[in-house]
Length: 184
Length: 130
Image 1 (tube, rainbow over the protein chains, first blue to last red):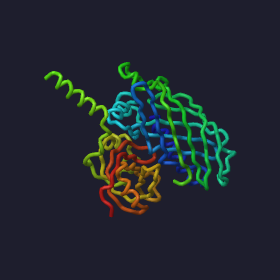
Image 2: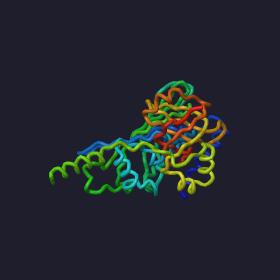
Image 3: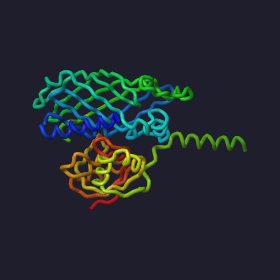
Image 4: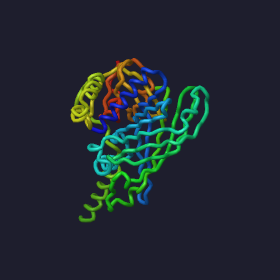
């Protein structure tokens, strides 16, 4: 039910965004990657179909991604990730909703790089926690790029790692995201 | 004998643990991009049950080709539509992707992972291009 409400909100943001012009930007193909560094092995995965909407007027940002769209190097890792850890049939999406401090000071007609603070709530595996992170926004010829990195502690999202594979999976994984608003 | 079997078991275990994700196999269903978007937009739960985790053959018109560091995401759908079908091409399809442009009609197969604003397909491969 929660997801449907959010989807409704995203649709609404998108539709009203179209109506009022270039105040809201959407990226349907953002990237999210995570990296787990553990004594026995390093694991990375990439999701290239991350949806994000940014509202230049209210400085709000909404991000949504499908857990099943994370691609791993090894099939078994992908299977365990979906079935045992994030339970993607039960919790199909990861969602972030927040605001960007200092977005109003960015002029989209001027090329430049800006460091901003993003604050909001991140939901993974049905658990929601506050998230504050620094992000870099770059304006390049009318295109707005955004990148950020932050740690995700698996315990905070009730993701349990069996003791048998404790040396294969890090307790905290590093997440990197990249968006491109303005072209698409 | 026992050592031989053990050795074989280790080789099999290693193969299973390290093999790359399986590529999308033969499509279980054939559907147009518009039909897929309509079903997910109208009844997301039913469409999720029907399509997610299935390999689909989707026919549609390219709205946009997006390149991200050597990987391609193809958006299929009508210009005016809010929702589209988003397809990430598998890496070995790059050569095909460079030849794709907006307006091309094609058949693409891939594994459906769900619905955000667009219906999402992974591990896609272009089957036919008109």
